[in-house]
Image: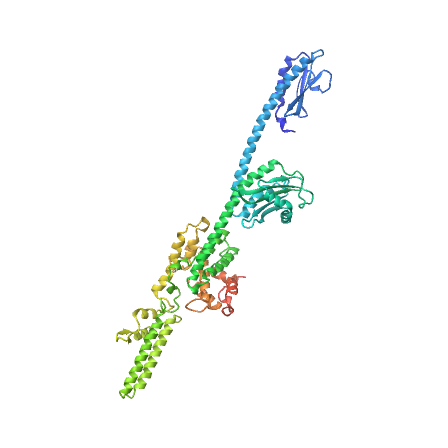
Length: 604
């Protein structure tokens, strides 16, 4: 049934014929055939009228040069033919007017509906195409609009143009053996034609076998503000596969896709630039001290490996933990910038390898003072010998032994590698009571008060004030990162980065947060930071420790409520420590680790 069948309704047509019948001579009859069906009849035997019967006149119904039906009119014998023609023309004219009016209304309705569909398509396409900021996802959304119509389109592909060398690469496709078809298409002479055509075109008569089994092609450039981004190519395996309407629909979608693709490219470029900036900052942090070179590069590697294992866990405490691409990116950036606050930390504190290190090495000054005491002891020996004192040599040797023992103690305590006992503190304070004289005869204590203070630090090389300076880098990190207007996907970077010195028992710094107040990524960075620091071969205060030594220390930290025990167990059980050390540590640091000492046996 044609679309015009709805133009004339049977009841209305019968009514028109019945209104006409009284005007006709007695015995007249009429019938209306429309769309190959008898729609209405009136008069004696009107339903039995047929074309070619005696005294039957035929009047065609035509719409846009196409005959859609006919009116058959029979008048009594002797009726003037001109009269019959007039009555027939009158009736057909009435029906023709209705047909044209209905057709006009239907055409307007169809145009309105088509416009609505076009707007709906555009609205849906805008949502689909702008849903992602990845070029491949934009291409996938665009191709999906055509892949769903596989009865008409057998192949589709989006080619992205490289702005540097003009090379085209496939970022999305569909269809049977799409990869091979894309390769054949790019190798054909047609591809140069397509990439050089500014508006796109249709070819409906491809030679059989020229490009796989394709017989029809349609392509449209992806362009924004005169910039050529790529190409949409659609193909069918039959001749005359595409029409102007297909091109119009595709152009509508491509106009949206091109803008979305450009946005995705700009976003990707900004993302690359931001990541490069982050790498520059992290490199600058590492370069601030030769002892931390590579720390901000290695911590993200450990953190991401551990985060991936937590994400992959199907059972246990991390079964519900997920890490999408944006969150993974935020973790990586936070790990790279976790020490950015150290840019305001003085180098002499960061690099302080001994207790007397500062802007200069004060142990060298103490050594010079001891040299003065050695000189004074020798002078005293000469004087005593000249005065005839028998014990001059003995007293001199005893003084030398005492000076050597005192300096050895100061040097040992200065290293920071051993615990300073109360007995050592008392001896240091007694040593400080000795005096030395300069060439002008001025007298000074052998040790200044600040030197005594530093040498009596019980563990490590930093005194409490210097340790506070170091610890402040965490709050500086948070303050610095909080000033950056991170996009929504990176809004947690300051929290992730600033929590690497917090403890799960709440005794860490800078805020004393507990486990429940720290996100899993923040706890992950804390473990990565500690493990890298323990195994790093470039610390100023010690050599890189063995793997088993580092694991043992971290196990004690787990027991003492310093680090997240569940994450540490995952770190061991999934072999994250092993993967990292095999890649980064020298062979002499890698020894056997007995995991049974640290992990509970798996339940049977």
